[in-house]
Image (cartoon, rainbow over all chains, first blue to last red; front, side):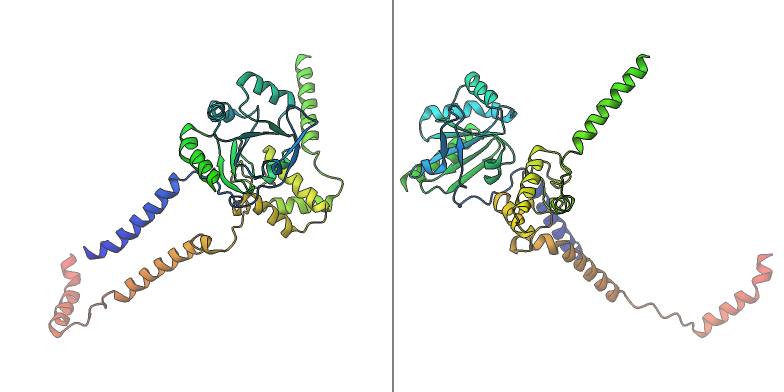
Length: 175
Length: 155
């Protein structure tokens, strides 16, 4: 009897390890950007291409940057959540239109509604690379000092907004 | 007639596709070789089990272009790797770095091997010695009888 205990324990430990591994989502790569300053950008706005917008314009405010594209299927799923977030007025929401055609991006906002204060236009995806974007949609919460505090890869859901984003925004707003 | 026309169209489009595929082969083959060598060390985040050299995902293409651009500006391979890690984390490296969080990754298989070996050694050492096979006098006698009577018994 005794001789089976050790192999059984090892087996159980291995199963536990593999079990945990199976339930992790390999798409969610931990971002090295959390706790670091939001990378600098200065990009033309989607609606008014003559005007630019930079992350420095937002210093002193807690804000949310959402990366989206008209070709992105999950963005369609996410869009109502963003509209709700914008309507609640709890945090300023800015968009980064990623590797899109300008007219497609504008058509999207026209037909689906525009939750953003404004969207910036990243045609060649260079700013996307600086932000480590690889699976649109992605969402960043940036604090008053311009530090990235949270990153969501994939669509926001009402649960994530309620349980993660809003509490964090409130906490950062008090700081 | 129709068949040969179809063939012609196919041939033409195939050629076009090939031509498009071959386009990135830049004017500078040495640079291109460096780009491909380094790209083969970097993971494509979209199709996670491919390198950005293998992958045809748009992001992989962008990252290859980024590598090429940085090399043109005179960045070293290490600088480019650091640039990628700063954005995408250690995950972009096909060869994970050696640090505290990756110790198990590097030594796990060795540990299992050593464990297996230890079990094997223990088993071998613990095996009971073979029993003494020396025969005593009466056994010897019986054996001699059996051997002598062998022929007769078989018949």
